Image (cartoon, rainbow over all chains, first blue to last red; front, side, top):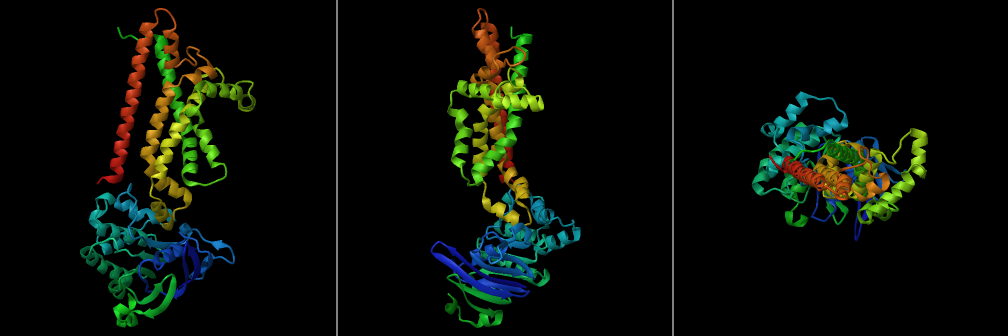
Length: 228
Length: 231
């Protein structure tokens, strides 16, 4: 379970958001500039909140009152970035294996094969990121985050940099990920269509504030123009 | 006709050894300082930056003289190193390497710092979320990505060390077989009657070595570039 209650001032813009999630996949939904990326960066530990608390499974990651701030490399939170951020000097196999090596986890051929198979990237293993298409790159980025065996997976608009054909190519993999990986997921998006397909629950953000939290069925019944 | 005398060979070997040792010893310090300047904000950063670049703008004689009064046998650093570790710089080839290292240091730091600054820091953030501690991020992402700049800096430093003259001759003099590098030997031959042929041969050697260094660095940089952006 993840509980977030943080405040952060970013110039003129400010975030003051609180929400909780159990397992399954929760969407952070809101227009661009509503603070979604900053919020997940704070959960990952890449951005430090001004005040508040972040707790994951009885493990306090951040608590301003106690002066506690666990650095990102000790949080074990997988993060799939908008732009993939694969390491350009390593081939796909080394990229996928990076999190496991850095986290000091034992090598597992079976886990590796399962993720590679689920994401359909077996034929790419010896290539470098420079030789991949945008969609392939995102699939590798998802695999890389999964193979570190995260306690929570953050997907920050993983489809945003792709054209609609590539989006349609990746969406089924994300649905499989949700159903097979059994890792709690936070899916950041401003696209209601994607959110409906992927999320169980939706946290709506606007201007740095949580507007409402609803389950996916309620969300899909909400008129789209009311969300825009 | 192009027959090098034993003395000339000695000067060439000495130059190569001094330049190589100067570059290799300066490298870890160069990487550390470049990283500090590229990534950290601290009190006295402008001062550190200035001191590192000083040998580039100071007359080399001044740098050599400063080395002499601090690292010489009776200088504060020199006497400490001699008494505690038995290390002597003055009038030894090691002193020449020290002078060359100091003179080459700004070139080394500049090249490495630029390549650190060119690295997308988002990649380092990604590595951190994957469980890499700051030291591991540096070793597995930052340094490998900066490699072309590190190599370029090393070659520049090596070339500079190979040709260094003013600081070296001021600090450790011009002793054949100990501190007489190619540059110092050319200077000597140019000042003795009938030394033109020897000076000419060493000039040719200096040109060939410098060209070779440039070609090798270009080749490394190209290879590294291919590694990072190619198939």
